[in-house]
Amino acid sequence: MMKKLFLALLALVVLAVGGGLFYLYSNINNLIVEAVETYAPPITKTSVTLDSSSVSFLSGEGSLSGLRIGNPEGYKSGELFKLNKIEVAIDLETITQDVIVIRRIDIITPELTYEKGGPAGSNVEQLVRNIKSFTAAKGKEAPPAAAATAEKGVGQGQAKAVEKKVIIDLVSIRDGKVNASLPMVDQWVQAGLPEISIRNIGRNAGGVTPEEAMKIVMSNVLILANKAVAIPLDELKGRVVDQVQEELGKKVPGLSDSLKGDVGKKLKGLF
Image (cartoon, rainbow, N blue to C red; front, side):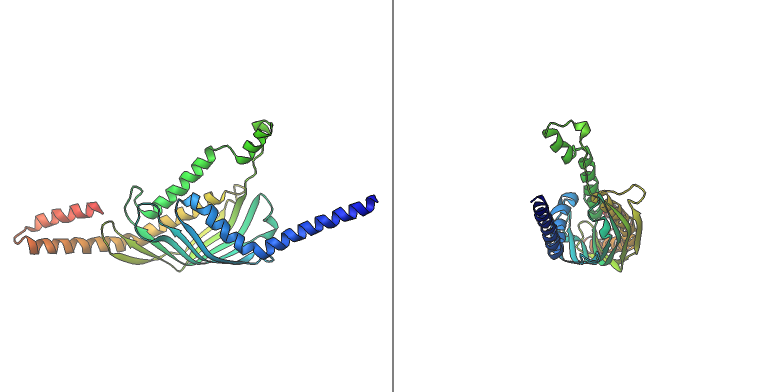
C-alpha cells in the first residue's frame, strides 16, 4: 500500500513539474514581453513596450523586436530609444538560480532621440537619473522577503531576502544612430552612434540587479551620445544664430555687427 501511495505521489510530482515546464516552454515569449512591460516602466519612469520575443526555451538564444523606451516627462519627442532588434543568449543552467548569467545582448540598429534641455540637461541624462533614483530608493526599502518573514513572527535579523541578480558577459550596440535637437528649435540633426561593447557586468560582484545593469549600460550610452552629437549640435546652433542675426538685420536696418554679436552670444546661452 505504501509503495503504491509513494508511486502515485511521485507520478503527481512528475506531472506537476512536467506541466509547469510545458507551460513555461509554450509561454516563455509571452512571459518575457509581459515582464519587460511590467517591470521596466517603474525603473525608467517612462513608457516601455516590446513588440515581440522569440527566445528558445531549449537553447536560451533568440531575439527581441521593437523595444521602445518613451521620453521622460517634460520632453516632447515621442520616444527616447527605439531598439529594432536585440539578440540574446542566456545560460539556461542559471535560469533558476539567484544569479542569472546572460552570455550576450547584441543591440542592432538602435535609434536614439537626444533632446537637449530640462533640469537634467537632456532626456538621456534624465533617464539615467530616473534609473539611479529607483536604485537608491530600492536600497533604502526593507526587502520584501524580510517583511514577509517578520509578519510571521520571525525576527528581521533571521530573514534572508533573495533577489534575482544578473551577470552579463557582453552588451554590444552597433549600427545605431542619434537624432538630436536643441531647446526651442524645431530642427533635428543626425549622427552615427559609435559602437559600444561593455563586458563582464556584475561578474566581479557576483551579480548585480537588473536596474543596476541598466544604469551601467545607459551611462555608457550617454557618454558616447554626448560625443556623437556635440559637433552636429554646435553646427546647428551656428545656423540658428546666423538665421536670427540675418532676420534682425532685415528688421532693424543699420544694426551694428557688435550688437548682432551680443544677440548671438545670448541666444547660444539659451541652448
